[in-house]
Length: 362
Image (cartoon, rainbow, N blue to C red; front, side):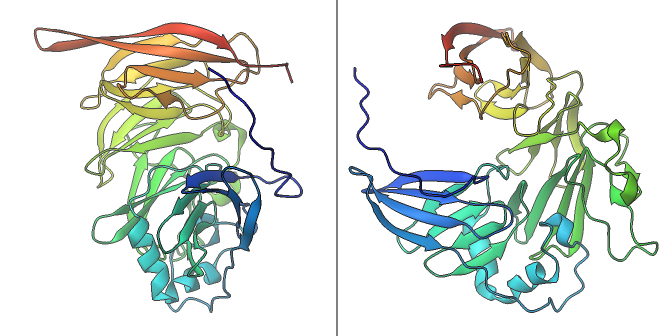
């Protein structure tokens, strides 16, 4: 086998860009950059030569203030949101765009995605959905999951650095949901509280004054989630808690002492495999039973460096029995084995191989 470089494209985006997405369609390569503080930009290249065909800068049209009293404001979207975000949905095409695209798989703000259809190119970035050909913008919160159950429900994990906003109708200016909770609001824009569920304990949702949200005691809470068929959510919090939450916000089960991780962008991945749900943290992987949350298997990841971190979502083989976990220094292959005795299932996670993955240590 051979791997040869066919072409090298010059820098498409001058300056550092936070989020970049790439996809192939037909004879073209689509590359998008989607920062937090500006609309995304799309560049189209010829697949076989790398020549730039065209560039397209998305536009967020100026929106009048919303005509309804939304209970959730800019913190639920981004810092420069607010009335203009709500007002974008005065355009009926914005809600139609969301409904065509729902339900979304879990996407972190860093995981920009591009969808190429016959009629349009749609970028899902940290500011929402941008349909470039029809020039439609639908604001959606970053790090959010949207479910379509007749009416749109937006789910957002409340992490340490992105707390949920206060409820505007609160008499004292509003309390907020403390980090380590799942918040769901209904409507476009979100105007109705739908559910709140704890990710770190099952006794209820913590609340705190707004000026205490960022205290050090709660500074290490991050989360990732996965939606199951039927709408239930499997979500892992960096404190080592894994939960299955029903669509009404109640807990189906909650498991403790699971994988931990520190940085929100590395670790804590939740992967559906045929035998259960695999959670990959900074130093270990654990396999849980989907139905009852029982721990089926666990294995330590062979991390050799203090700053070694899982760099991206693990890749699952077509058969679902091998999971590739990549750090900046190596690739680890996990083999999932299941044995059934008298109706009971037991599982093993085995480290198959290690492949050097770094040309130098940086």
